Length: 248
Image 1 (cartoon, rainbow, N blue to C red):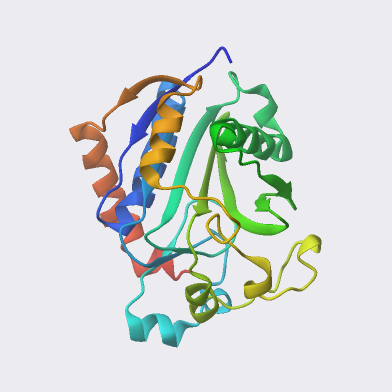
Image 2: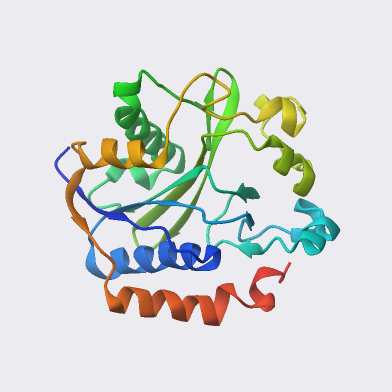
């Protein structure tokens, strides 16, 4: 491909800040035109919900409050997801001028799927796209994805489940009221799986190495002090505020 990405490999110890960093990179692409890929691991248990979701309809609030599991509202769409150590998270910022196919929502998810399958090729692993934004293996969902769009830039970020934690999903997340047709009203336990359960082993270090060696990367970069300061501001002003996280 002609246009390549600057790669950020950075996992913050703060669950809230990891989401703020994604938004910072999105806005940075809007201002600079530079496309980024970021990969990161979740440090601790948390729940991310979509920007327009009603949180009480998505989670078992009493269980979350009792166990002090933070509920954080994303700036992107999509559904609720359990974030836990063992998940691999990826974020791509895509200027439509460079990635014309991403003007279309469905085609942009195909772009992300093809990107992942290119990365996974040395492992003999290939995912399929089911519904609008679910990446599946052997018919089970192993990755959920969501988007934000603004000023000719698309942000796509997703979570890849590499190890089992279906017990956490069933304990903290309600069955969604709105479901893709292919789900056929299956419960979480019969719908969601992970790479390990489907016969594949992938850790963050291996994933990071595969991306660094791929044809998608222009160069590896580190977040600057300014990047961290801006992300910290988003944490303070938005992602740590109940008025944001519980507004619906």
